[in-house]
Length: 228
Ligand SMILES: C[S@@+](CC[C@H](N)C(=O)[O-])C[C@H]1O[C@@H](n2cnc3c(N)ncnc32)[C@H](O)[C@@H]1O
Image (cartoon, rainbow, N blue to C red; front, side, top):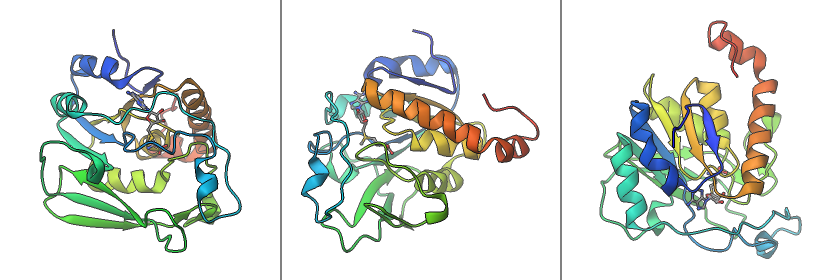
C-alpha cells in the first residue's frame, strides 16, 4: 500500500501504520483511540443530565487498543500525544501529561481529559469549555458530528506548542476530523485513518467545508499557495 500525505483513509490504522516509514518524514502522532465502550452506542448521551442531546449514529468497530497498537505507534512516530492515557493498560512511557479542563462542572461527564505527551516532563493544562451545547468560542461554534469530538482549538494549541515545522501529523483514529482541520489551519501535513464509513464521510465533508470557509486566511497564511 502506498500512502499519500494530506490524505484521510477509511481503513484500520493497524493496516495503514506499517506504511508510514515509506513517507520518509518525521512524524508527530496526535491520537485519540477509543478507551471505553459507550460513546459508540446510539443514544449513549441521552443518559447525561441534559434534556437536549444529539442522536449520534452508532459506530460498529470500536476496539480499545492493546499494547501491539502502542508498539506500532512508537515505531512509526518520533513523538506522541496520546489522549485517554489514564485508561490504557500499557508499558510506562513517560511523565509528561496534558490536561484538557473542559470547564464543565455542571455535567455528569468527566471534568477533564488526560493525554500522555512525549514532549513534556511536566503536566500542562489547557482550559476550554466544551459541555454539550456550550462551547468556549461561540463566535466560531463547532457543529458536533461525532460522539467524542474534540474541539479544533485543543488541537491547534497542541500543534502550536509541540509540533515543529516540516513534521507530518499522524491521526490514527480520526473521528470528526478536528485534528485535520487544525493541521490545515496551522499549515501542517497530515495523514489519518478512520474505520467507520459513516464518520469517515462526515469528517471528509467537514474538512472540505472548513477549507472553503477559511479559504482566504489559508491563502494568505500559506503565502499565496492554494490549499487543496
Ligand atoms: C475517540 S474517537 C476519536 C475522536 C476524534 N479525536 C475527534 O475529535 O472527533 C475514535 C475513533 O476511532 C475510530 N476507530 C476505532 N478503531 C479504529 C481503528 N482500528 N483504526 C482506525 N479508526 C478506528 C472510531 O470509529 C472513532 O471514530
